[in-house]
Length: 274
Image 1 (tube, one colour):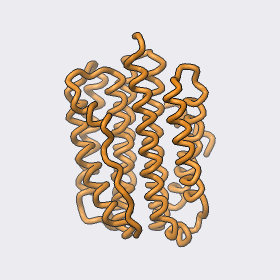
Image 2 (tube, helix red, strand yellow):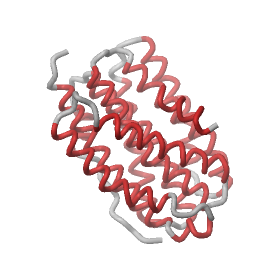
Image 3 (cartoon, rainbow, N blue to C red):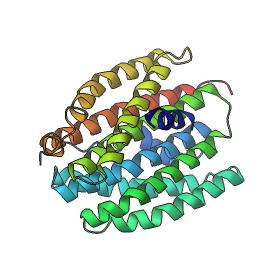
């Protein structure tokens, strides 16, 4: 089961600082002329936000770094909607247009759950609704990717998925600390780690990437090691709850590092001949 799911993935209470929207992300949203690399970056960030919002919801419901969780949740909702509006203005093909419609449809029930008072009932309802949202965001990213054959654009897409995986692991960790969906959440947590590790090696070994990109990978490895250690230190929910605030903090640190990686790849892709 683990091997099959992994192959499918390959194919297709302490407060901490909330990572602000990166300057390069703001620039992407403010840009008047969109290109495929920028669209891939933004669509890929929608995948990440789908996971980050639920991570924050689960933190808030369990009283884990509540102030930070509340800020992350609201910031992520606002950013998701802002980016969706940006992508709606750049729909170069019927496939992209269809994908945008599907993402909007998946977002409506998720937003209603995310903006309600957090609780176990809502967390249960979010489990499947959020997976549908993540799938819709992923399909939209693939729709944009279908408009390019540039190898660097492909690297932008898979690097963008690293952002999502950084938040996905934390999301499933917090499902486990709330003792919800224990077995599937544990399986998804391990699958996400396997995919994150494999793609990091793929980018690191690519002959196409610049020295700046390789430096970004080094930074991710530095942030990733303590994060994965605490994520997989225990399978007992009671022990996992003791490390919950640390997981929340480290998930944001890895996210910041992966955002930098994507920014470096987008800059390199935009500077390459098409």
